[in-house]
Length: 175
Image (cartoon, rainbow, N blue to C red):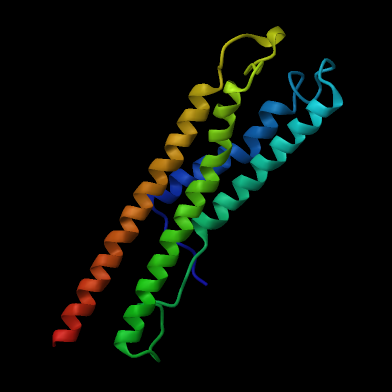
């Protein structure tokens, strides 16, 4: 199965995933979180849960960003008649679009939930001994925006390819 092509949208989604996976551990495997003696064991449990979720979302984002298909036109399927080959190519493009939508969702979830946590009663983005405010907000909102832009770019590219495939099919049917 061929790997998906290198495109700006897929690069953006990859940057989001590569920030998320290790970033959770780099930020939280520290004196302010995992090794904070003021944190009760249950808080550390939830912190571990959050770090593991970040790693899982990162891997899922990468998988759905780069999984390839390979049964459409130009992929060595000489045994298919033209119409069936064109239909297969369109299906491949639709499956790729769905994969990118899924990658965008997985690449967004951590950042959305991290920003939503700010609104829970009594929640602070930083323990008082380590500062004030919400210093993570620029990173969280930036990564969320990058995921959405990456998904939008790639879905737009795939939609254009799908339209071009349909146009070629209609031209081929007339001749």
